[in-house]
Every structure is written in structure tokens, then in C-alpha cells.
Length: 133
Image (tube, rainbow, N blue to C red; front, side, top):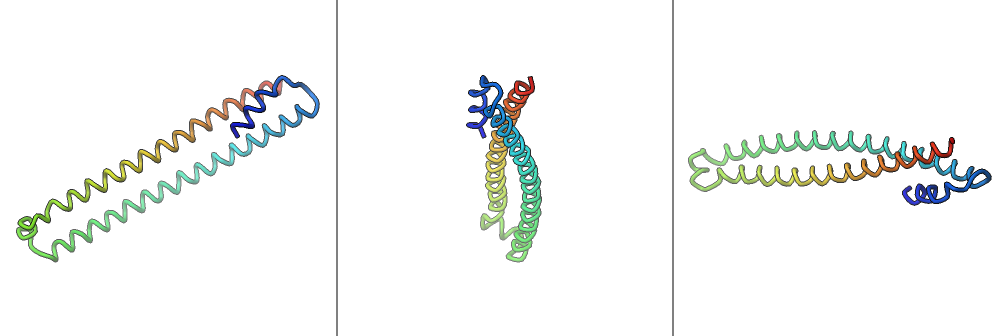
């Protein structure tokens, strides 16, 4: 899409004729694809939200199961003397750090895509405005 927009910017000096019709068609196609990509991104964001919710529920269920297993294995005084009490906290910290890293990467990717889409929309608006003049 970027290459097409750049081609249109480079060819904008041509006026009338088949080149102008071709440019108009390319601009319409780019605009349609941009809208389609925006819809797909919105659907993807929704799905990611669902997955995050499901993961949170799965983690809560896992935590409940781990606590149940620890209660079944031995009394708290035995677990503490064996050093098992800190394992749960370490696991939680590791999982939280892992999720924070994944969230940061996802946020960075979405911000990059959003930035490119905004840039392309601005270029398209400029090209369409020049075409209409």
C-alpha cells in the first residue's frame, strides 16, 4: 500500500487522461483496503480481549487448583519448612513478568500498525483532495 501511495504522489503531476483514471481507481482501492484492514484490526482487538479474559480465568482456576494441591499435600507448617511457600510467589512473579512482556510487545505492534494506518489515511486524504481540485 505504501508503494502505491508513493507512486500516486510521484504521478500526481499528470493531469487528465487514463493516468488520472488509473490514479482514481488506485486511490479507491487503497481506501477500500484501508477500511477493510481497520475492520480486521478491530476484530483482532476484540479477539485479543477475549483471549486475555480467558487466560485470566484459566490462571485463576490454575491458582485455585495449586492451592488445593498444596493444602492436600501437607499442613502449612510442613510446606513452609520444606521451602514450598515461596514457590507460589515466585511462579506468580514469573507469570506476571511474562504477561507484562507479551502485553508490551502487543501494544507496540498495535501502535506501529495504527501509526502506519494514520499516516496512510493522511496521504490518501491529501491525494484525494488534490484529485478533486
